[in-house]
Length: 224
Length: 224
DNA sequence: GTCTATAAAGTGATAGAC
DNA sequence: GTCTATCACTTTATAGAC
Image 1: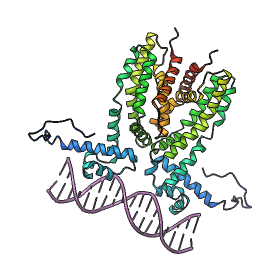
Image 2: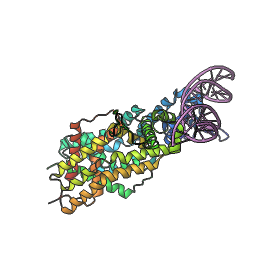
Image 3: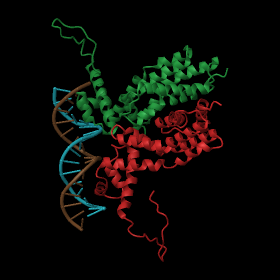
Image 4: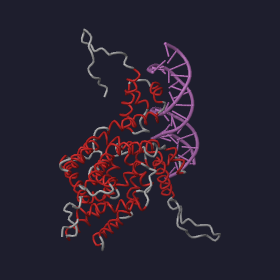
């Protein structure tokens, strides 16, 4: 979290911090880190600014100078972590259209997604956002947009390409991708949403996702 | 909510309430109704016992006599409403195995489910439960069990029967039903989960669900 | 069982010194 | 920008009378 790369040392072997390195930015990050932990543990309302203050190590007034109030802090923290969290695997989907074996490529892609999406911290963040959507609709839209841009959009492009080439019969690639996501990662995700302690073994995961991919391919296989 | 069936009238046409009709039970129900409204609007933590007190019309001490504390009230209210909410359509799934046209039966079933599941109040309840799962894991398990018993279980039986008859090739009916649910109602449900203001037209709903049913049937059609 | 009144602790937010 | 100290208010929960 707050660990820097090794910097230069002075003649006594003590690290030289290049400058105060914008101590303000440093504190800002400490606040964000502390707030995220508290919001995830307690939820928005039950998380107290006192607890965030203690955990961050800065004073409460500093938090208010930086973020104004609790709502803005919440939006900044959660809104900031979302793109950062999902910015991991945009790459995978693009290669699907040119993969030597489509089924293998789709299975690998979905398994990669599932590994991220089912991580306990990601599931907690997801629950937090869902639980506050009636009070923070912006977060719902942001989450939807981020996950869509990161996951669905590149795959829609790929399905569209495969359709044009005649390798798939997906005249409505957007719907096909929604179904693909629902039938693969959506299945274990639903279980983990309601059971935080649920564990899905790697074998079980591959079985579910493999079957989901077969479902999609059986329907949209190009009729040669 | 609190409307009784018409009772007997006295000689002046004024309704005779048979007895104090357990005034305590009446107040208990008033508390539950008020608490549900507040919990749905504010979430668990932000909902105040004062607000529930005012809305219910009874005193705060009465609430504590009945439910002990806020946590128990929450569990009683949400845990009580869950089975009650979903006790609507167990019937539909049983008829699937003997329907004259399987596709039509599945589409109608899924559309019926979607009409319930996408209702704004049900979606809000679902978000409330999801948001509090890290603090009330019992609710997650209860929700999962209730929805499973009400929706999936009868359909698993039906898929099993169809498999034995050779009308479907579903050696793993449980997985097939999970995929059916995910590919039909799961698709619009995901959208509505993150966007409370989303609206899905009846036409759009039938198109999505129809396509989802085709997905399942294409994969599990009996290979004659 | 039900009420009024209140206790005891915690809440978000800010004033003013530095 | 950051801190200490504090405000004004709300919170859950409970005594004690009836």
